[in-house]
Image (cartoon, one colour):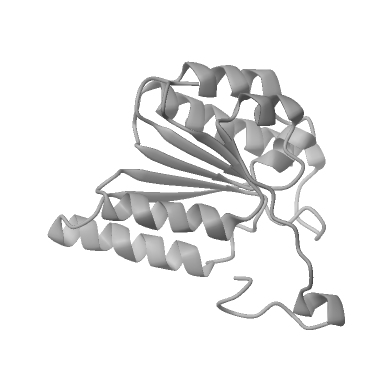
Length: 181
């Protein structure tokens, strides 16, 4: 990995988007690539970061923001297409991320829920590790999701694991706007 430029594997998207907010304030160019979550969903973080991207465009404050959705939805819900269709979409998303990393297109990347296509074998873990290790210069990359492959964990500079102790959903409460989405 480039010296002093962390790659982070983290269990929760919320923390990654907190880092994106800090990067925006620092004037960094931000690119979010959201895997697994439905392309139809407009989550709160997306709305906020897109608004900050608009603010940057209109006033020059902060940094530019791009948001890209990869795939067709949550792994445990019905979605159109076959597993190979979803794997192909994930590989296409990774190819775009790779191009951008190699071109130093952004300062800060969030690869949200990216551990899952790695875990499912849709994207080659060794290739991802090599691209992250060999990326030029200043780019920060945050990878979120559960069950990160050991090779990614070994290569990362910072790894956190968040563990739920108790959650309202355990008692049957539906996801709450502004909390889960």
